Image (tube, rainbow, N blue to C red; front, side):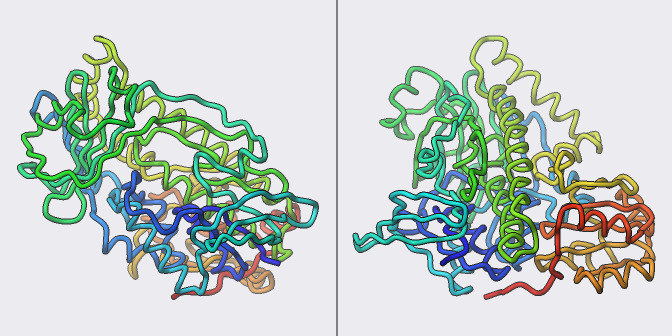
Length: 513
């Protein structure tokens, strides 16, 4: 019997397979497509995703192959209106103070190659036909690439099969939300004449806007815009020549070549639940929203990393099955928040009407320019877009407060003399961080409990980041703070684990290709 059957080999499914395999969990991953995608809508890998990719030594690979987008330039009426510099905004927040432009098809290949290096085969052209579950297992019927059918059994099933999820529909889960009036288009093009071609650009004109994301070399860029007039009714028939190009032309560029064009309707929906007994719902199968801010793919990846350590703990009898309920609580809660925020941004950019058009062209760029000159506003915007502000305060796994850091917070990132305080986190497991001097009894407790202890000599920069001297921060395997104990005492940490029936496994080196 397999531990987990993963349905869907997009970024969400691939990351789930990688993180489970790295923790010794036996997976089987199937996908009805013949191979990784050769086109992609998702283009941006956010800072929080890259931080977590360090656990499997993946971040450097993507950073080396991707394009660092240091700034976004806003244009109106063919003139520069604002310049938003990400490096300045995130330099004290993350080791990756920029959005990384890295097309999803390249991303999927990188993840697939790593999974192959870990001796896991992605079963392509393989379709889930049906499944049923009982108290102990899930039994699924699949059709293989050769047309033959197979019945297999696994402890859990993870649905990573996209917005039209077969699994979600079979469970008859609600998928409440709606569909925007506008149709979205994406196009891969070769441009010439673009000012600052290494940076991103947003051109806003009356009745039209376009986002330009550079990637690769020789002027290769991704164009993203909307279609909100009568042409939207025949979106499937449109070509690049059919769309309004006022915003593109106002950038003073020439489109020399179009290598790919696609249009699609944008939805905003969240499933009723992300868990139904032994079936878990992740990624687009559980939530879809506008592409504003480049959040979709990253949210699915963080779903997978959140679930992976919890599934591994339950399967290894290191936690009760109830731990999986926190996956639904934490990730569905964030999905609802994300849908609301991206809905506001998308609506602002695509709303029709004279007033909305005036605000979009004349007011919004000015506000953005002024706000980005204020350090606190720059940092707040970076934290939101990069998902480094994602917290789990309402989770049953979050407790305590030390300094400005609470249970449920992402551990603040701080540079150290030898690198940064995220460097000791290249493996998947529970850890305690102490900034200052750990109590002797805490050292003994960590040794007894099998929890890695990482202590750092106190520096003023830790206080600036909100950390408290000599406090103990117990980190979950996904590096969010589980409990913050201001005095560094053992008793609250022991009570935290005992109350939740958690038996942590020490952080040990993960399997790498």
